[in-house]
Length: 64
Image 1: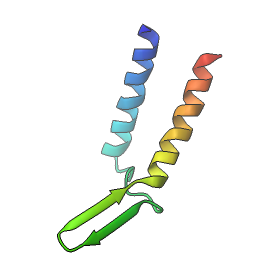
Image 2: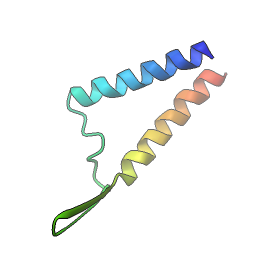
Image 3: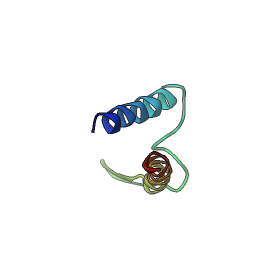
Image 4: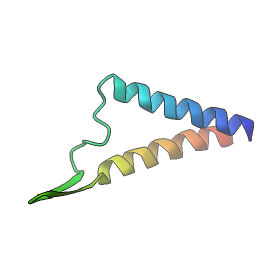
């Protein structure tokens, strides 16, 4: 359990560092943005897929 928490913390810190350095995570091409009047709807489809693939690869490496 402790190892999993440390790995999760490192992953979150790495994503934060990449965003701080300018990685446009959350504003990738393919993300849906609808602006009408005073409201905005934003759904990060491609960002969700990218995060899912990365987490799947990382977690599969740690299971072995």
